Image 1 (cartoon, rainbow, N blue to C red):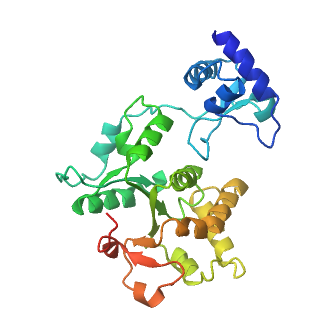
Image 2 (cartoon, helix red, strand yellow; image 1 turned 180 degrees about the vertical axis):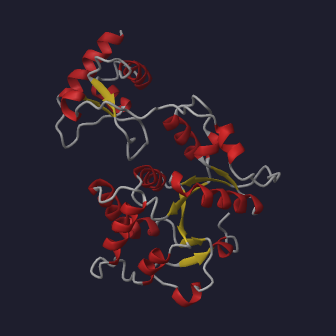
Image 3 (cartoon, one colour; image 1 turned 120 degrees about the vertical axis):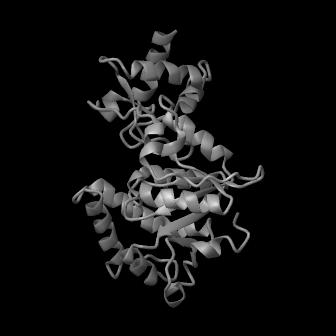
Amino acid sequence: MSEQIIEKVSQVLSGLNEDKPWMTAKGLSKRLNERFSPYEIESVLMEHSKSESRTIRYSFYPSKKTLDLLWGHTKVVREKRYLPELHRTDNPEEFIEESEAFNEVDLPEDAPFCFISHNYRDINKIRELKNDFLDAEVGSWIFEEEIEQGGQINEAVQEAMNSCDYLVAYLSRQSIGSLWVRKELEVAISVEKKVFLFADGRDKELMKLFDNWSDGQPPFKKDLAANYCELSTKTVGKKMNSKWYERCQYFIGSLDEYIANSHCIILYPERADLTERNNDHLKLQNFSQFFRGDNK
């Protein structure tokens, strides 16, 4: 049956155009009139993708709407020598031992639970945030700690997002070009999950960008947004990698839409000068203000 699935899926994927070359296992199942289940298709394709003679491979990034794996035919998407590992290879216990200890707090059974979407380069700030959430009796999920060795990354992220009460997206010059952060945020919005945007309060250039934001438009005309995208690209060591830069532009250009679904931006760490620089359109708040309202 595996050969039959590969043959059928290959016919579908090789016929796609370069503009939309990817499909999920669910989409392929429907295209094949559900003759094969998504689980059967994905299992066979994952095994096939390990072979040297593979003609079908998975994408570096998951689906925008569901975070499912995306599959494409090498005839259309071209072969890659390296594909990212779908399963976690290191042991999370090693991360926990090397990291600062998390606060020991016995959370109430009805304590809210949040998914923290972030870039791994911000892990030290995320550790602090996780501890502050614990002090406020809020549980949180971060992939560095929660995904077991050998665990399937996409499945673990999907399960955590489905079970969380809300999603926190941490915005920084390290994260605005991350496709994972963007997709996790957009998936949460699409399923009407409660969303909160946290922003790096230490970043003076990000604060300057917020200061000049008005009428629902990022300040591209003043070159501040373009400069920040360039700064992000250089900060993550991409030099002037055009793909990362374009992702930064997309994220900043979509920030108004994200804000509309999150109501405000919370600065973390806090800014003492928040009242002086507050922007009514962006509705900036400090972290301590976050828990004064009905945000838990």
